[in-house]
Image (cartoon, rainbow, N blue to C red; front, side):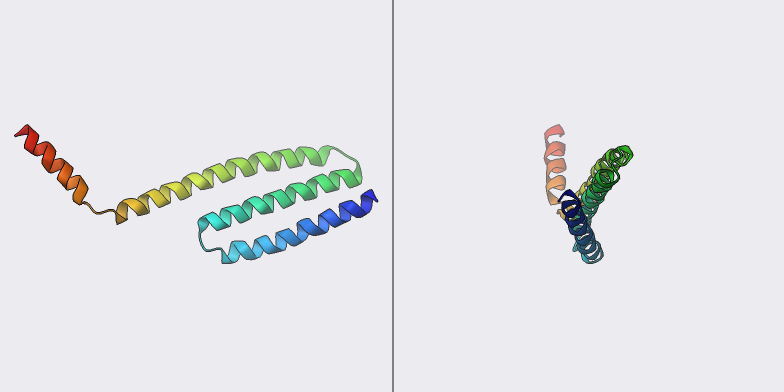
Length: 111
């Protein structure tokens, strides 16, 4: 029964990987692609754990831990890049008038 469960879990993880690959290619924006990469990482972790259970060795659990750490750092890094990109886009779209008005008011107070 355990073998059947592990095979079923593996098939579910592999099907998730197929859907994720499509999402990475057709994602609307960068955030969608990052979420898809996180799901891909989760599926890879599941496959590592299932493989460790099937061969009854713990070495693949170490691989899973390493993957999770690399995935976490990668997600944090990519989210910082996207945030910076979005902040830059918002600054480009903001009108410059409020800054000029603030500078004019400051200049008037000094005069």
